[in-house]
Image (cartoon, rainbow, N blue to C red; front, side, top):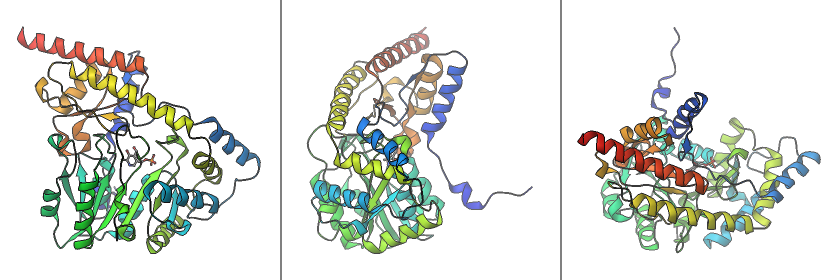
Length: 394
Ligand code: PLP
């Protein structure tokens, strides 16, 4: 029988989609499941954005457009990134892609050789490790520890850098921890990137979902914009996960390389979604503000609720819409507890290990779910753990 190309054995996946499928299978058998596994806002896309898309379809935005994105959207993104990050950005530095994910995939494909080393956050978005390994590079985990509020230990990062290190990946605010990298840490990381001539992939997809303080971008430090690929997009900020609209900002040469990868893969991002993207960036921002306020309310509720459950402790995340409670006090390993909660309590969560080996001892819960779901989910988790403890005692 014909076999797959060997690189396929190195390609990972996102467990969230697998857990969702298992939860749906249970629902098909009549079980009620509370979904706390999904990483997407439960809000509708703002109405003015949807209206712009339908209007674009009606007025003929139904054909191929330039591979890097339509001019208006690249200009709007350049303005937005220049304003929010405090750096000059030209439209030619912007590449629009179907979601933010292709920016991650293409950057690694374009900039990392086989045998290079790439340092990536662990626990972190699982696609980093997957794509690094897929291109034949070595994935070097940078542990994010609870005792450091899931920030980066810069001395540890410095020790991980070798002559083969090609790129370092940052994600702030972070999935799955909700942690935010502060100015001091970023400055030290920027110094290391300059000293060792590294590329930086700065995944800032949650940049607008921020509750306390500010979330600086590493691009604010001199010399960094030239070597950084800044990833952002519309999925999270504007509740547009299904639209597939994201972008990267990078130097012009890298932008041309990514354009070539777009030509070889997607041809372009859907035209009418890009027209709507201009509206999302330039139109009313009140829906975003309201969504983030609601996420803040839920964050506080979930963190308090989790901290009341014996054996569980949870830091208050500064951004994104996830909590990453420490569950070591329950006596369960993370994958085991996640399975128990799904099958015994009807609560879908993700094991911390779905985000790398340093995620052991944690679960990820998304609070992009209604207050009723969150309330029900917490009650069920508490009940399930109480029964399990009573059972082991009896
Ligand atoms: N980066 C991180 C950290 C994410 O959590 C996600 C989505 O879950 C993405 C990138 C990709 O988002 P999208 O491709 O939907 O824009």
